[in-house]
Figure (spheres, rainbow, N blue to C red):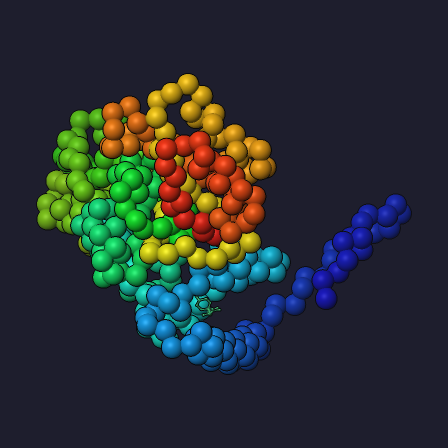
Length: 382
Ligand SMILES: O=C(O)C(=O)C[C@]1(C(=O)O)C=C[C@@H](O)C=C1
């Protein structure tokens, strides 16, 4: 046992004896212990997988993998993992491990098909892996519009689309898709975005042009101005597409995530990320065809169309205030239906099944031209 801290305290008149060094652990013994624990973990994972199959049977004969998926239950499982965590591993690491276990348990029925903005190596693909785990089947698609389309027509069970970045704000294409789409928001996930400068040679002096998505140029503008002010900047549809192009030329580089570097065989020109904001984070939405039940800590997104008249926005917001519902975000976009008509995207704390939310929405229906509930979904787990 480690000596108590008080044993080391200096006492007057006493010669201080250095504390004995803890004995070095015996490697073979520690490994034996790890092997024994691994056997237990493996047996427990297998047992858990059996129970997950039983849960599947308890749900009855369902049509497809998507019908077995329960995002509200997954969020509850992950929150319990976080609540139980006493270290030494971080919440993020443990959530990742349990996410993978659930992903594998669910895939026993049939893997989920998840559409995202491709090609492989995009941050959207990383968000898919973070939220659905490696047992889900990712479908790289050409645009955010196509992600919506493929979920709408059933070729994908869910889609993952970026909605806002901590530094650059809203991804407007995504919000605009909700103006006309019937899809629902079923989840959200946040991803730390680390932008790397990548090239075939890995030498900064070779670089004459850089490919990247406009968002990534914006996120690294300060670094580029200070370090590569003269290079040509070529915007492309995704960072992975930029990486794909950069692998064909010695004088080209790309700004993209580490995984794009692995997929396209590029080296890091600078070892650390080059984005101007170290905490750069993107929030992604999971889109599907239905609203799931409450998880206990949820968010509701609504789209409200209002006419340009005095007090219109006040009328929209006051029912939420009256029913004690916090608003997390509000964003307006032209409605594309009539001139000077706007769609307000509002994120609220709570679930549509909760009485306060039901009452506030009913009141709002009386005031505004049109309300669309875009979804109620679990707040992101780290
Ligand atoms: O609890 C369920 O409904 C399950 O199907 C089990 C389980 C799990 O592995 O914990 C698997 C998939 C669901 O998305 C949620 C949870």
